[in-house]
Length: 81
Length: 266
Image 1: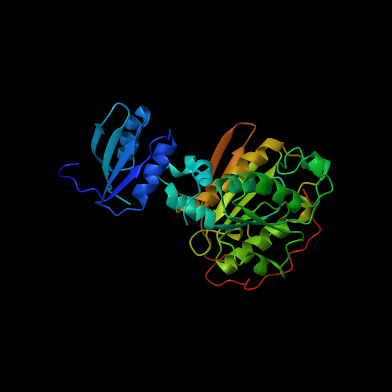
Image 2: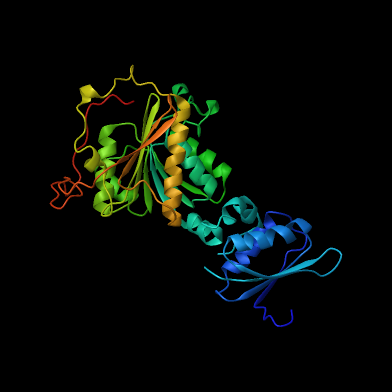
């Protein structure tokens, strides 16, 4: 992730909704405001839903990248407690 | 504490709520709620609190399960006739959720035992069926400054209010003294549509969970009245009474009294 300092990475490959978001949300809850979370996942549905839910919760989605046939990386900055 | 995989699945629909999250769910798991009565209101209120993962649920009731209870008291069942209600509720709630510990007390709540019983709990739920207990629970919660979610049902009507001593009204601000026994419906008159106990008990559980989470607005200074026949909810504003005998500026009730009266138990 060029230019973006990632503070925490999680791998939620194999998980489906809603556990993809449950794991992502618990990870970001434990971080400080301003820190950046990188999520590696392989669910197409979650690649669309997690960014939307993170925005709904007030966080900033910095990027959503498809990095291979099956995998996505989502980068989110925590904006509020 | 970290959630187990089972807990992540069990509480996933809570955790994904912005108002709850992992932090709110942990508050629920650490919370201690005391329920007065394992009957029409205590059953549904306790059922949802157990499902939500409230870690410790205290319950007091001296009665055993009777066939006439099962039209509304959903923690019990036909195989449990004659069993103590608190034992039956404990079996039901702990089977629903192994994260929950139910402390059942087979006794009547009195002025002599109530302080010891409730003082280690965070919130009290009143699901009692008689006025002496209702006033005893109110006065004890005011004296201990303990949040109280009070519920009542009769026929097709239910009432819920949330008492935050020192902050809002109390039950005596609403109704200063107990009604004389003659005004209370006799057993023959006092039917109840079973399903409305579920509505009122679930409202009580919801108030408790909001208090645990510190989210939203509870029924402080408000009496909520549910009329099932017309399907209407009415919110009645309640003023804190500065002359209230228990929570007012110069209280005359400074210790618990003898509340026994020969009321017909509804």
